[in-house]
Length: 151
Image 1 (tube, rainbow, N blue to C red):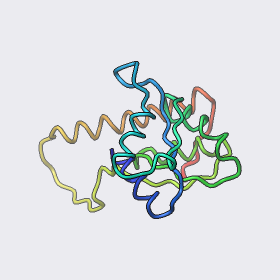
Image 2 (cartoon, rainbow, N blue to C red):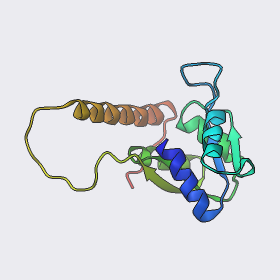
Image 3 (cartoon, helix red, strand yellow):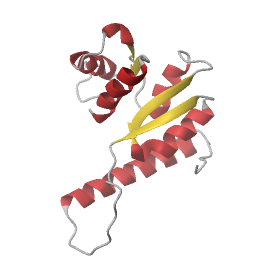
Image 4 (tube, rainbow, N blue to C red):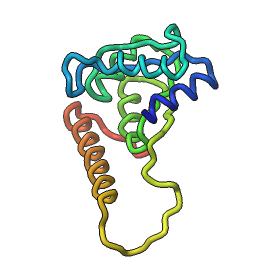
């Protein structure tokens, strides 16, 4: 929801079209993510003609590959979780896409104050998300033999 909400904000500021991707990767195999995302965007006031749906892709790489043919030689903005920045930029580089990364879903408000306490459920969820992202980076790097620039 944060990504789609940010897409609406960005669209309202720039009047750029919104491209939503994603195939049948939700729990119900009959549901196409891109179509559900479009419905949500329309409910937030975006004109249907400003939304391009691509019903392909099941992960970041396959979704970016599906978009590439629509945006040859164009700069695009990708809205994703802040923790996905490294992987998204590496994939974009490998596909020769020029992107502007717009992060959402930060896990920190920016101020870090070290302290000791008992772990809580939020800490375990943050750890789970971090492990997920690191494993996705490793999968991308190993499966396609790509190098990841740490910029």
